[in-house]
Image 1 (cartoon, rainbow, N blue to C red):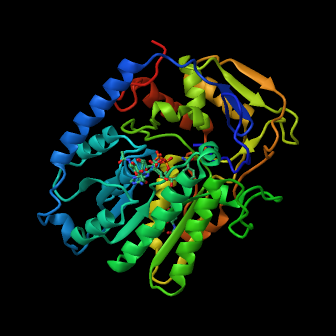
Image 2 (cartoon, protein in one colour):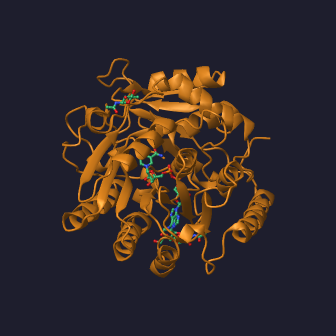
Length: 417
Ligand SMILES: NC(=O)c1ccc[n+]([C@@H]2O[C@H](COP(=O)([O-])OP(=O)(O)OC[C@H]3O[C@@H](n4cnc5c(N)ncnc54)[C@H](O)[C@@H]3O)[C@@H](O)[C@H]2O)c1
Ligand SMILES: *[C@@H]1O[C@H](CO)[C@@H](O)[C@H](O)[C@H]1NC(C)=O
Ligand SMILES: *[C@@H]1O[C@H](CO)[C@@H](O)[C@H](O)[C@H]1NC(C)=O
Ligand SMILES: *[C@@H]1O[C@H](CO)[C@@H](O)[C@H](O)[C@H]1NC(C)=O
């Protein structure tokens, strides 16, 4: 996604993708009817298999009872990029996990990988459901004994949010309200919430601390800020333990190559910066366009803070471990170090071994020169620091998965072959 703490309120016209000072032109639309049919068939078949494997809603299972010494975490959006990585980490750390996802953007293939890694009963279950459906969510909470919720499920593309704001207020703000109400009704007392640096808007002063005033400037950031506000207001008269994590720009993937980032083909044009780079390396798009080389930054291109997903999920586990009843913790999750678009592109070239074509163009209105975090609060309070801070290493890891999964999790992509 494009969560560059950056700032366009207007959707771009034309078909190029904005990436914090970097753009790429769209691939030519391919005639992809066969691909689409294959995609639908694959998803349908996989759904059927997974649903058959999921425990029935009505029979009590190990998931429906609290167990001494076992923390059962509901991971919403666990079929998505960050949620699947968080699930992997939780399972490795002996948590019990229930994923709820409606697969609107996630990959059942990721859930399958996780189930194959942790097939023992009582480790992982997948429930296909829509968080916008309060009745369904309520039923899930009645039938499962959750100790905590990590709420990742959302729509998360800044550009898309300006084009379809209601989708964002619906799937972020309103769905978070449903999750919160249902947690309250069922006495689930720990919430870890996925928020974003997009809630800050364009602050004048860098680095961004948790005290920096939030003035989000696009519907994505606003919807997340509203969700935060609901959670904070609710927590004032509740003993819920709340941790709000505001991520900067998430990159990378599982160092052991089991999971990766595989957005739906139709979402690629809304783009995340590493996705754009990999698409260029694969020749799916002709190259990258860097917009603006005369910012007052060391090399003139925009500067952002890139956080590796492995570090990010580590922050979630630490937040979960340190969550305290009646307390709210709000933390930036970033490296504290800004990287320029030029640096990013160079790291991507090196990681992919492809001499990606880069055009340097004029500035685009609305881009903010620098966005990076001050991560000292999370270091002091949760003893968390980013460890995977070598851009080239993170991109190399992600590229390795991309290369060995040309079709993502098995669903046909628009490839150039
Ligand atoms: N990727 C980033 O750079 C970044 C940065 C800051 C914050 N975040 C936040 O992190 C969270 C996860 O992001 P991601 O990059 O993994 O996105 P993603 O799109 O890969 O995953 C989101 C998942 O939520 C599911 N989902 C969406 N709406 C749903 C609904 N109504 N019911 C059930 N499931 C639903 C989707 O199917 C998908 O699997 C989001 O809340 C996002 O706002 C991401
Ligand atoms: C996913 O949830 C949204 C509501 O948030 C709904 O509109 C959409 O149809 C759902 N998608 C699927 C595949 O169930
Ligand atoms: C989000 O909500 C809208 C309704 O506002 C719905 O059409 C859409 O399918 C939902 N889900 C996603 C992932 O967009
Ligand atoms: C903080 O984390 C480090 C590992 O990253 C660990 O060695 C150290 O003991 C931790 N400190 C505290 C106070 O928990």
